[in-house]
Amino acid sequence: MRVCAFLLFLIVLSCNSVDKPKSEIDQWQEQANNITIIRDNYGVPHIYGKTDADAVFGLLYAQCEDDFNRVEQNYIWATGRLAEVEGEQALYSDLRANLFMTEDEAKAYYNDSPEWLKELCQAFADGINYYLHTHPEVEPRLLTRFEPWMPMYFSEGSIGGDIERVSTRKLRTFYEGQLELQPHNAVAAVHNDVESEPAGSNGIAISGKLTESGNPILLINPHTSFFFRGEVHAVSEEGLNAYGAVTWGQFFIYQG
Image (cartoon, rainbow, N blue to C red; front, side):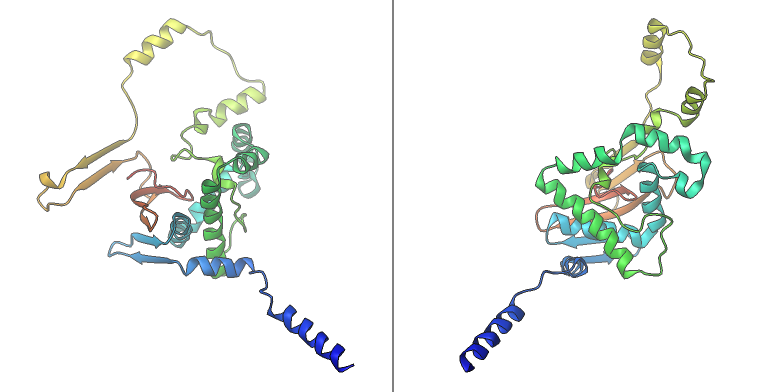
């Protein structure tokens, strides 16, 4: 009987000594411990992480600190759920978003991605979700949880650079039967394209040899509203060291 009791004690002891799987919150906290965010005199976040994924985690956390509303708004818009918060007038924006990419397509792109990219996408989601966990006073308009497949909706840094080539006004007139198709003149179209003035954003890098301070200067005119992008610096021990502008909610530095 004593032997049985002793064996039972050993079994219970061994079960208690087995490491319990970490909760999602514990995993977030563990990754956050690998990250340091330092803000300079201008408020620009300088994010330092051990890995690239750590840097992405910290980058999204810092973006949420600065303007969570814009981060959330960009994903509400990109995922085609704008009408849920803005009403019927946003239906054609949502239609355009779903014509561009559906949720199933975004998930498929994520599942087919290489492992290194999946890690960055997971860090993106974890960084935002950890921010929401540590800031219960923040009340999202719609998205209470972010998923790693969401960045697949807009890998183009301007967010609307591709999708907005199709206007919601023309979509409305097409689906409501009011669109008048104009005859197409291929020769005139080519001529106009050749003669038209080039358009786009500008970036100028000036060497420190040419500046009074001796420091290099990067001038960027992204042709956006003043607060459309944040200024950030992301560094990892794996070689990442990027400085520049990031569109709210994206985990890569778009201009810099």
